[in-house]
Image 1 (cartoon, rainbow, N blue to C red):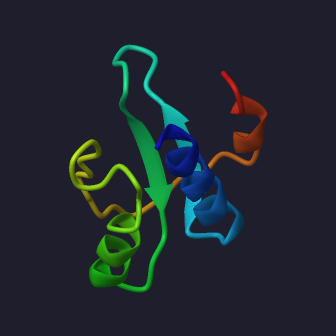
Image 2: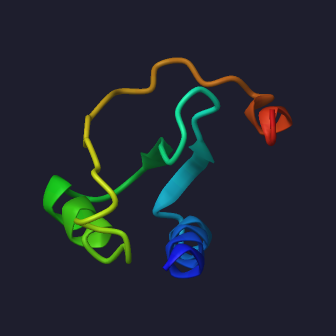
Image 3: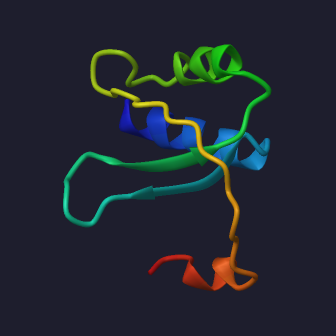
Length: 79
């Protein structure tokens, strides 16, 4: 299941649905996804396709407005 889970994340990233994906360093088996969708319903339908959902993955969806975005954000990959 883990391979399917990771492949699903990669597919959503490549399709442009997920903008940032990565694990938390201070909490195992948890992480952050910065996603974009036309509606909350669309995002929730997308999350429901994760092989870990709903038994092993719990998603807390929060909407926010990005007012400041660093030009060098890609330089943080892997850090």
